[in-house]
Image (cartoon, rainbow, N blue to C red; front, side, top):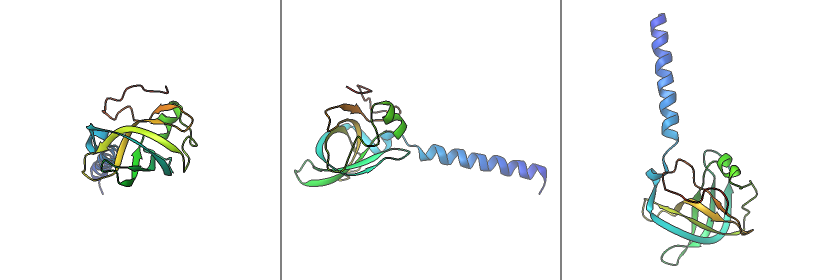
Length: 141
């Protein structure tokens, strides 16, 4: 393999790696519809505190009144930590109120959280800075 060929190979590998990382981090507007605001109150059934975004799940009624398990997406653990969240802020069985926006796909019980009213009465912001959803009240209230 010539030096020129190796250089081209290294450049192409770099382009593929960069493209993969750009594709991996999506804008929330691709999945969620900012015009579909929703408030849910329910019990936490599962918490996934990991990068790139935390997820927690709650049992709450949908618009038809039928109980469903909702996947709630928040910002990164680091962003949430800076806003007053801790790994143990949500525990299974806690009742929380989530304000956010619904997924674009009809019938999908996914929400991008803007804020969460925690069991201790604190209302914390939970969207990412880059979500493009126009969230207000960053930080804790």
